[in-house]
Length: 303
Ligand SMILES: [Ca+2]
Ligand SMILES: [Ca+2]
Image (cartoon, rainbow, N blue to C red):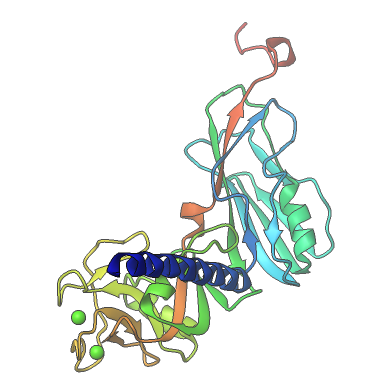
């Protein structure tokens, strides 16, 4: 009878799907890199004039040693008030920090530090203000440079580019790009101009890499499909001679080793260049300021 066979096949398919999904997840775990894994969403902290830690539960997994990196913690300029201060309360060998009172940026530099000590240092980041202004402060923590991976930072836009040489198809490349890296999700690289294209070519280090472009929706109309420019028409373009040729139906974009672009089938398999906009999507802490009682404050001028 056809019906029982159909049910059996559906069940088999479901069970196989579960195994395939579980296997995929286990692969993802192995391909993960240093990740601030519990800070993907914004936090809320209340401060009262004392030094208060902002990310006391921050976790970095897995432990990949050593780490050479720079992190920024920044009070958003639209919310910062002049008495606002940031510091690190911990002391760690190989780590140093400085606070710029004008930009309200605390910069923490790690040189060959264990991930455990990076975690200790970042957990100790503290905020203090003597301001009576109760405006909610918006504070980010984000990586500026990371040398533990094949990454480079483009100073023009502050974005981090990460080369992953494992060859995968277009769909997997997009999926892998969004995995958290130091607590921030990425995307396949998008190119804004010739300078960024040159930078990306150098970052690709002799590999042909996926970019976030596609014309699968409308043949010949190329758009970015990931990242801040997702949905935008791609302009300018840097096609190699004779490209795009849609040879055999090619709807995905690659950056060749010569810095020129080629359209390829989505089933093509190659390396990836991930892009991260750390400041735009870094871990945010919304800080509520609760001033101390009036008798603890200086008297208002004129009274
Ligand atoms: Ca095409
Ligand atoms: Ca082509």
